[in-house]
Length: 266
Image (cartoon, rainbow, N blue to C red; front, side, top):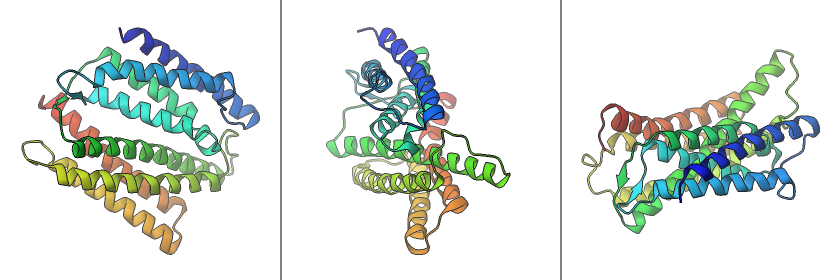
């Protein structure tokens, strides 16, 4: 099947749902329900994205995790996670940001191709890759919530009203910590499986990824420990969430940009 048709359709649906969701949330404060037309179109957008992504990522030679394919996959996971959890208003309001991002990532993968084929590997390695990508997607949503919190708090301190589509700050903060905790456990499992499955750190160009991943893991561990023991919240928590996510992004996408696009190495 040609990937362009479902891809373009998914992009159009992503943008339409984002516009409709922003109107609905701004006017009524409501969420996107699967019982509404907008909710159904959101699911169709995810299906179209998956249909487009599958032949790009799964090849006869192995799994393609080139930078554009990987970005599209992560965007699909983030969008899917948000749609599944739209009963939480804190996440429903993120649709207006995440869906356009998913449309851009999908469009970029359709326009540009820079394959990085990973040969068939063991079950442990496959689980490591899958868990790491899911954790990355959850951390990305938590980081977006952190940015929302920082934006809302700045407006309040400058005596400006918070935008109507933003839910209460307490709900946003609680959701951010819950996502971070689940993502931390997922990342821990993925890293453990990765360490077990490593064959050649130097030959596989993994040293930088390992360093950044460990630093990110430590950052999130400190955040969750501080939350549990000393009830950390507010600006300190947001900074740690954003810092941990940046470290993960540098380890994954930063290294892929350097190796695949600049140095042109696998």
